[in-house]
Every structure is written in C-alpha cells, then in structure tokens.
Length: 90
Image 1: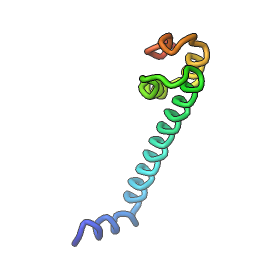
Image 2 (image 1 turned 90 degrees about the horizontal axis):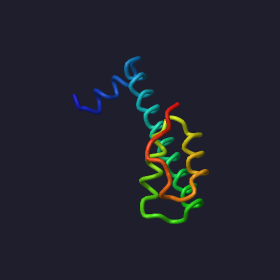
Image 3 (image 1 turned 60 degrees about the vertical axis):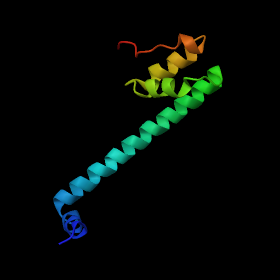
C-alpha cells in the first residue's frame, strides 16, 4: 500500500471531501490575502510614491479586520510617515 493509494481511497469518502473542501477554502483565503496586500501596495504607491517600507505597510493594513478603515487611513494620511501602526478601535 502506497501513500498515494491511501490518499486516493480517502478522497472518495465523506471525510476526504471535508479535507479537500477545507484545503480549497484555505487556498481561497490565502489568495484573498495576497490580493488585498497587492491592492494596498498599489494604493500606497499611488498616494505616496515608492517608499522603502511600502510592502510592510501594505501587509500591516491587510491584517486589519476593517478594510474600509485601512483605505480611509491611507487616503487621509498627509504623508507616508503619518500612517497609523495599528488599527483604530471599533
């Protein structure tokens, strides 16, 4: 019995479907996070030009639970160095 044959057997069971669907959902969420960071990076560069820490700032904003608050913070900051380090309290 090989690892592939065991995996193939379980993929046709209800348990295998749960595992597959869970992996699929995880991949979708990771894709959304990457897309959100890329969008925020583009927004930051458009607003403030190329900055050394732009990717780190985009990553920080991408982790905020409120995407609208992140966009608002970027849109209303007067300079790149004025961007907040933490998400405002709800």
